[in-house]
Each structure stands twice: as structure tokens, then as C-alpha cells.
Image (cartoon, rainbow, N blue to C red):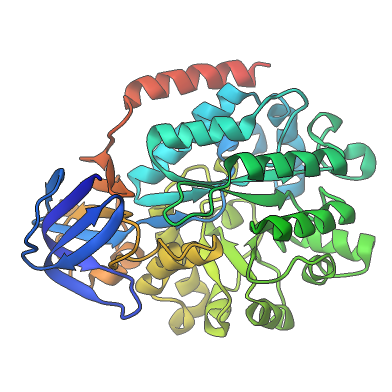
Length: 451
């Protein structure tokens, strides 16, 4: 049984049920689970860290990503496009995905997440080119290599351009083929146990890329296996016009008609919900992954997060795909989120601490996890540390709970711990050579984009 002891932490922002902030305490974890938090713990451990001067926070939870897009970011030809045109242009690149692109993009993206305090990542992968192999297996291997807690998705599309959708024929499949592979993915990779490092969700791409039957069967299969459901909903007005013209319903009403509301469902973006739809989300416990940077870059709109939080809608934070962000820092997302809603809602906006909880506890709730999201005895030892002596934090330590919203953090955190294992040390990945990884990734990216 491995153990970790962090001595004399300056401040621990627990995000627990009592919103406690602890000063001058130790934290002990055994076998990846927090055993005790308190002053002068009479214990030793396999790994002992000096927490003097350090601020400790629960690991952040990223609730929506497209990691494969790491290799198609900052492309000049798509920078001024909105969602539908942007997708159409990029599918010409994404149709060439292979397991090595997936492995390296997953390692790079998860590495950036870890370096910025994120300890759990959900990835919405829905592009499965014909003959591309076991892409989920490549993702889970990459996640294990770097040490992040990882939720993958068996995403899907069955409407190609000839069916009125956006993707080319080579990346769509039949409903039967998708369902068969969804069963295989869940049976092979999903681990629902406490402290699980890998889980699977079923995640058809969007209302305009999949058929009604695919959505319906995905919901039935997910509930048969006890896994969660995820897709993009209410991201743009184009999507709203699509569901109105094709189904005679707004996006949320359409999703509800095929069984896609409830506490096991969360939607990415959720920008264009009206008042009654927000009440439906709250009443059914249907969640929203908020992606403020991507929403701004693609000119999609501003999600009504202050209202959602007041109504009790489950909300998590997310960086979205790297081609529409174009990075993977959930701490940056938190700060942008804080500023965006201050601009939009003034005194009605969530505080920096509210958004820290959205990015930790809120994300854990969307993923159906009760074992992560806060620092408390019995929770997984997922946390990150920031040195309070950093020059950029001088004069800014009065309210450590709100720090990342009001002040932000430039550069990586000092230490990230996942399940009691140090995965970022002194701001660098502990398990990998970053320079070599960057070289390998850039080489593969050039090859991929040249196809």
C-alpha cells in the first residue's frame, strides 16, 4: 500500500460540504485515498512533501474536451469561422486520424491539463474513421502513461453529408455498428469502482450529426450498462434552426423526446436555453459543461451560468476541443469564466470561489463521481499545490478561495497529485520528458496535416 504525507500546508481550500479553509495542516493519503487532514499528524509515509508556504486545492475536473484536436489548432484557414463552417473545413483533416495521432494528442493535452491543476479529464471523441483501430484503447494507454484520471467516450455520428449532416462518409457508421462498438467499449474499459482511473460514457456527437434512432438506442444502452450520456446541445442558433426545421422542436425538447434528460446526462455548451428550459434542466438534474473560451472564439454566445447556478442546474467547467480554445488549461478557463460573467451579470455573477467549486465539485457531479472533487477524509487524493511565495501572487493572498477567478495563475502549478501519486513536480511532468514529447508530437502533427 503506497502512502503520501504532505507536511505543514500553509492553506488547504477543501471545497468540502462546509467550505472549510484549513491553515497549517498535514494531509495523509494511503493507497490513493485521503486518510487524515490535520495539524501534526503522527504518521510517516513512502513519499513525504514539505507543504510549507503552499496552497492546496482539490484537483480540477475537465468535463468536455476533444483531445484529437490538439493537432489541428491555430490553423489560419479556420480562425474566422463559426461552428458549422468550422466543422466542415476541419473534417477534411480529422478523417485521417490514426491511433498514434490519438495517443500523442491525448498525452500532450492531458499533460497541459495536469500542469494546470486538472486531475480528471473527460474526452468527447466521436470521429472514428473506417479502419482506424482501437482509438479508445490508445487513449486509455496514454492516460495511464501520464497518470491522469480519465473518462473516455464512445462517441458517434451516423449522418454524413449525403444525409444532410456535416461530416464526410468515411467517419460515419451505421447505428448497428455503433451500438456493437459501444457495448465492446463499455465491457472492455469501463470501471465503475471507487477510485476508478478509467470510465466510459456514450456520446453521440450532436443533434445535427446523428439520427433520432442513434440517440434513442444510445440512451437505452447507456442505462442498461449504467454509464452516462453526453452530447453537444444548444451550442448555436444554427443548431436550434436545424432541430426546428427537421423535428419541429427546439434542441432540449427534441433531446427529451428521445430520453436524453436526467441526472445521468450532461450537455456541452448549453448556451441557447430559454427560461423554461433552464427550469427543465434543474428539475431533471440534467447537467451542463460550460466552455466559455470556445464559446467566445466561435462566436457562439454566452451561457446563462449565473441563472443555472441559482436554479440548481448541475454545472461543470470545460476547455472544449483544442481547435476551438486552443489550449488545455482549466485554470485559464476559470479566470475567463469569472471575468465573462462579471461583464455580463455584474453583482449576479458567480464569485471566484463559486467557480472553483464548479471546476471541482461541479465537474465531479457531472461525471457521476462522489469520490473526487473536494479534499476530505475518504475522498481520492487528487489535488494541486501552488507556492504562495510566487511573485505574481504577492499581495493577493487575502482570499485564497477566490484566487483563481479574481487574480488567476500564470504558468503551471507547482505540484499535481492524482490518486496519491505526484504527476507534476516543480511545474514539470514527472513521468515524461517534455522536450522529447513535444518533438514527437510536432513530427507526428506535420505528417498528419500533410495527408
